[in-house]
Amino acid sequence: MRLRNIKNAKEIIENSSMVIKKPQELKGNFKSLFSNDHEIHIEIGMGKGKFIYEMALKYPNINFIGIEKYASILVRAIEKSSPLPNLRFLCLDAKLLKDIFDHEISCIYLNFSDPWPKKRHAKRRLTSPEFLDIYEDLFVDAKHIIQKTDNLILFASSLLNINNAGYHFNEVSLDLANTDIENIETEYEQKFKKQGIKINYLNATKFNIDKNDIKK
Image (cartoon, rainbow, N blue to C red; front, side, top):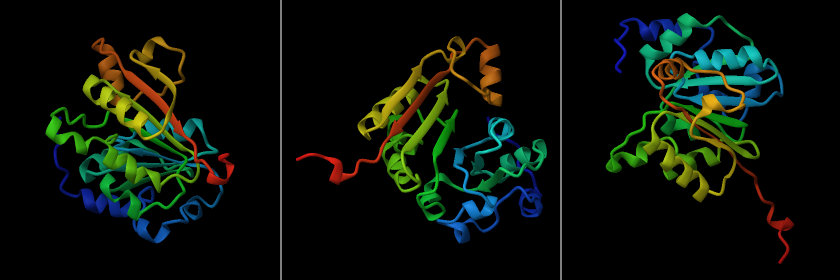
């Protein structure tokens, strides 16, 4: 669904204290933005921001950055959120993440990303090998990805690609609502739940291996 363009979106973003204006200047030192050493979690494609805002409220000892490509959508998140010390927003295309972060992210959330169902568009999926390669240099230590989607094509592709990238699956579900997994719902998720649509979920981790620890 397309969101109507907001004419003064850029102005609203520029004037918001919640939005990071010059992220390139913080590369490798994003903790200075929050003035603490807490973990930094990012949501790629945060939409109107309900999920990441509620996560920031619930976990004050974790720093959160919501990333949204489209300015008009980011404005909706700004309008719906009150300033929190552990939450910032960033208007950015996910393809540019390596230009912004350098080994400082602890977890990536991918909630209801565009499924790009056609095979010729598979590289555009946020769990494609191309994007998983981008994420490699973002993480501070162990890699941690959590995904929710209603789309089975995207989910099957994610399971395959994440497995091939060397991740371990901590939790996988084809019906998140009927599990005891702790969950904060997004706007899309609430809508799908009312329609009886099941939500697919994965939580995967990849640990760095020190070659010196490998016995020959």
